[in-house]
Length: 374
Image 1 (tube, rainbow, N blue to C red):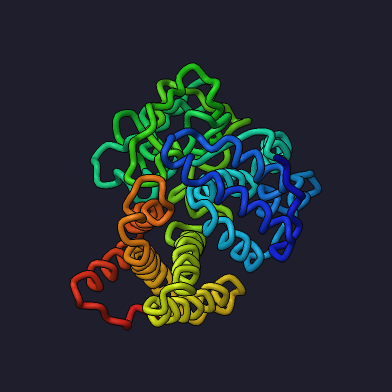
Image 2: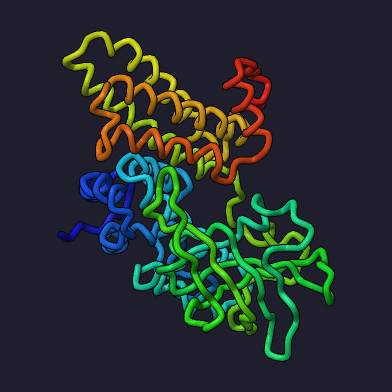
């Protein structure tokens, strides 16, 4: 089944795409199969074009260059329909934006048009530079200068769709002999290299069909044609890609919360006792979405940390409220409410900055303090 191309978040084609994604989400969750058809539909609908301009420095990229506000609106709709597919899209988009923000113009012209069109799939494996495994004395993925470029050894711990990607945007710590330096590189590594190996995807509590798991790099040489940035200190700050804990993650959480609230609204049409709680949660969601929109428009009336904490809290409470409303039926495998509850837990661990984690723990312990808002 095909879908019309989406050129704005107000396009009827977006609603059509979301309906198709939602119809496939429960079966995909049960099977654990990679959502190839869902991603194909998104590519056909032009979703991958939202995040990049038509051209960068005169080089064609094929994007639509949606504003941050329009991207937020698009993501809210997609996440409400199918969180896992939407999460995969964020990883693909992260790879594209990192390449676009880099200084390698030849790489941009070679790979971005194929990625924007949906012809190829790429993903990111950079959590070890931001939140994961950073407590270890030796970096889990290292780069050593070799005669033909940088030689990568080690692994990236959390790579979504690594077993399906043509390329992986990853980062490594530059070594000086056996000692790590303060510099890092970012590289766009083709998975066709014999030294790249994707481990079997991890079995997760939710989103298992995102096929997230480790990818190993065994003596993989990265020549200059595949280098995105570095060697630099704090290479993740290079360019304009979004940082962990930014409003993109909150957007997906609020999209999932809206799906749970919509379910409760439908149930309340026959069950009056659900109406008060559903309306209260809907009003709270509307307020947090207004905060999100203010951030997306560059007129933030709250911090990113406060927004993320509120989104985390809301997605957990709304999905559990929907489960209570669904009763025993919602606890059966294959019911969307049970899936939403498992997916909501993901936001406690996905790129969750320590201040947000602390706030979530305080709320769970009944110690919540709204001072984090500013």
